[in-house]
Image (cartoon, rainbow, N blue to C red; front, side, top):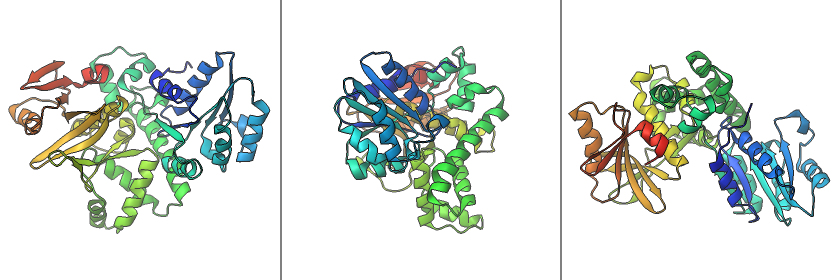
Length: 401
């Protein structure tokens, strides 16, 4: 199978070469970190001046590397002092005390290190303890809509968009029939279960496993809605399951560290400050999110659209918060290159009431920053309503803002 090239990530990695900075590819399991690393390996190996040392801890070929001493020995045997050395290690957290080894190799001349890992807390704590700020994370996401089309060799159009909305962007789906909802759902659940077991349950010795799974389902059903640890604790009590606020906060952090969900804070638009409660949570992959809810897609389509828009904004380089007004909410307040934009996500703008709700929230913002409504309204590509741009979801996913 050919490797899907994702040049935006390769460019981010190469930008930090030669700066004595360890580069860490992070992201949820099965979003394609390993394939980005293999693409980098192939790209670097094409130059005779480079010496590439590649390790993939998911393959039995490298089973003998279990500690930092084994890693040092393996690299020393293959190191070339007269060439540019690139040490690439996939799933580095499987090597005990790996940070002791990478600390040494980072300081060697003409040497660059690129690592992958699936747990933010593990990597950041281990690396920051010994290295301070001398590492940079490159966040790998599930496939964008454009990558999804290329990867599955689809014709761009409403049918392809519908598939993307329903299945999400896990690259591993290339081995399955993406038109078979049962196959897609089963694969998404397998990926989720692997992440929950390996990155949370075993790592943190979780005792209340049923609550962890219930929490994932709760967040899936609440996508795009403000939630708090207090509200979740009260909800669980209503389900005759007593869970402390402290436990809720702990498990929510674990889910974020494993890149299963992302927490997005609220931003007071008028006061221009971050608020400390009622955050929103979005899933790394819409397909995984969809596999956790039992409702038909037409009943929660706006949640899926909002989830997809959020991750496209992150992919496009925006820092994203939820906007809070005195009399309502704006889905996204986005900043890039010190420039702000406001975005409302919607399914269909089909009547005056919906138009007033979506456009009205943006009209109440008293500044001149660009404002957008993104929806799946038929026949809309781009239009203007009193300075607010209405963009179709397809147009946004293909061409950005």
